[in-house]
Image (cartoon, rainbow, N blue to C red):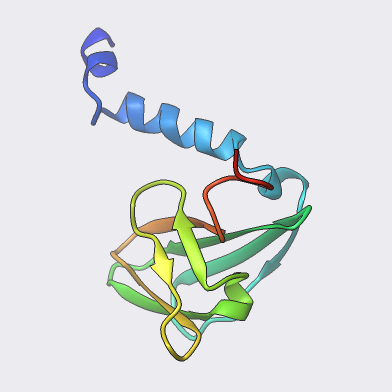
Length: 120
């Protein structure tokens, strides 16, 4: 356990960061949600909204990489900030986000900015 605490890439540290980020996302617990209809097989896309803040969650449950295309309107904003890594997305000229998901990958995006509500 001590070795995992010292290793920033350990499963323990990853899990602690994921739990912290989940706690910082009140849209999931308290917001309204909807499943987005996407043509990509094996991809779950959900949009959560609470008090003017939008969270877009994408999960690839398949064994193959997928490219997800979501309109900025469906995503909630032209700018999506990745809450778990650094895969931010800016809508293209056609107003679409094009997001690549590796097999079994997931992305959590907050529409517009990193923080829920007004940025500090």
